[in-house]
Image (cartoon, rainbow, N blue to C red):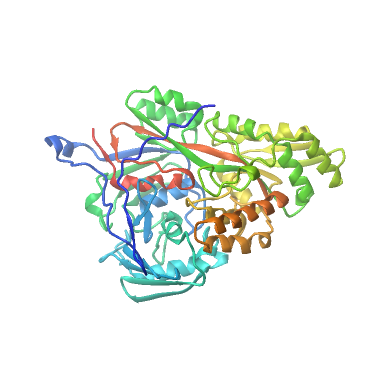
Length: 526
């Protein structure tokens, strides 16, 4: 099996100072760019970065997970009270610092002076209050809705102070606030041309539907002087081979979603850097509302039928990891190896379960939704189809572009779907989005949320340690019985870019698609 070449992080860590009654996050981490006057030549370098971007974002609904393309653009044009630094640590953003009460229930944020959105409107504590209240409403579909619903009161005593009072302690709240989906937005978060408005280092100045975005440095950004990239041309290139060829030929300087099939090619290309890291979990998702898949024994049978090693091999060429159970990284102290290997492939057991469910000879016909836009999705669909045939289940593959998968996934127009649970923070509570919330393509359709809600809430509230580990173990046992989706392990994620780009830092695991945060401190050197 191949191993990931995860590049060392160059950015400095921002420390968190803990006191007896308060935790204070100090100022720091402005820009990562070097001295542009070094050698007297860098000032003349054109600071326009051209990106071959894997997908056109389908929209910008505040707080809603609309795919990685959406998330990556949001990291450029919006900011929350906090964000992620180059090492994945939570760092100050719109808030210069914050304090946490000793009981963990009150967070007091101090906003920077003179904040403004890219449209020139002032950004005050009232905008934070309005945004967070919106994110807490279930009907608005925010990915972290349950976390914001845990805020019992939001006070804005003046323009630069926000006080959050929680109903229950929430261990990972700073990481949730740093999630780019939870950035602070103005009253009109999307302009008349359909582009997002925010308070980030860049702003969209031109949008050609189906073609590109043009972004320029936002003069209203709170650290505008540290942003050296003057312009970003983001050209939509859905085809992976087109992106790779464009990078190798010099047509673009940066690409996302590098397929594993092209790692070797890019590594051999002079003047180009390949950056890889562990990515998100993949999963076979279910429509749990009707048909045979609504029966738990059928879902258990499907879990026993799948060859996780084969799914890892075809999806990541062996760079990823094969792992079942809850979608918690193998690097986490909350990873449970016994649960992760519970559904090792066992075709006889799968057939026994089908017989218990009333299908002794199989005879089940299902649709299997995937997409042809990203490497590994169609390939995994073929493995799933082949494995299910061995136990008498016929899966008809339906494919299309990623937008088609999102639309059909959101309304449950499938029996089975190649997808994956959402995750946006390096904390076990990040699995909450896989079980709780409104209809979305990143969550199995019709999941029985009552099975998980109480323990997930408890896990989010409990400090790290053995008690918290036991909560997630209990959740894992319920998952193995219910099987609302079947995980097959972590994939890989990769960016590639010209060696002339300095300051880009790739993040790892659940926050990998927040990596473009670091472009705020990047620069071109030639």
